[in-house]
Length: 255
Image (cartoon, rainbow, N blue to C red):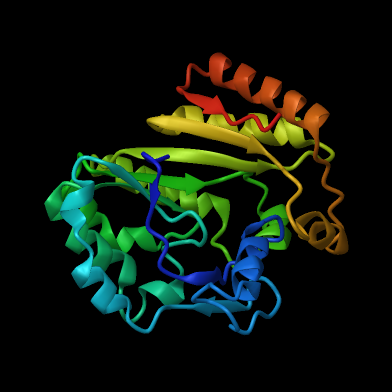
């Protein structure tokens, strides 16, 4: 998704996705005596989000020319377009406004629909911005459980359709693919929609065990499976669907 760079400008995330493993990363930071985040209050995952008090100054003093021509992921440890990050300060837009004129390229990875607010900026720097939405399923009832505060998947698809109409490059990350009863038919349904959308690229990944994510899913009544056998089977199905629908992409294998 990048050339090894990421623009992470918040601590935590408010979507509260049960499968996310970033909570474990932040807890390690908060416990590290050398970390600038040491001592921050960490509630349940999805209930804490901190923004650096000097973020505006950090944006201004970052030497963006250093990354001219490089692709940067926004973001790898939180959704960059959380409502709390966009309103009222519009932090993701302000980062883009500072960096894009210097030739920095961005992959925007989000479960939000707020990128529509910045389509004018994406279109102005059309060759530098790739908008990617995480859409693991079209089952809205399932996402209401697993991604409780993220917009429904159909809304994310609609956002991508609108972006494509404006000539903005789009992609999809189908992750995490959670194996449960009917998961293959669910994935087939998603690929039919993606074949109609024709994104530039599609990536997929199975559910991986990280921190407390499997326990959180189990508490919500979702018995998620993870491991080498699951990874291989999901990868096989994903790659077959890519080929069947003539779509460009790759499956991210852990094992």
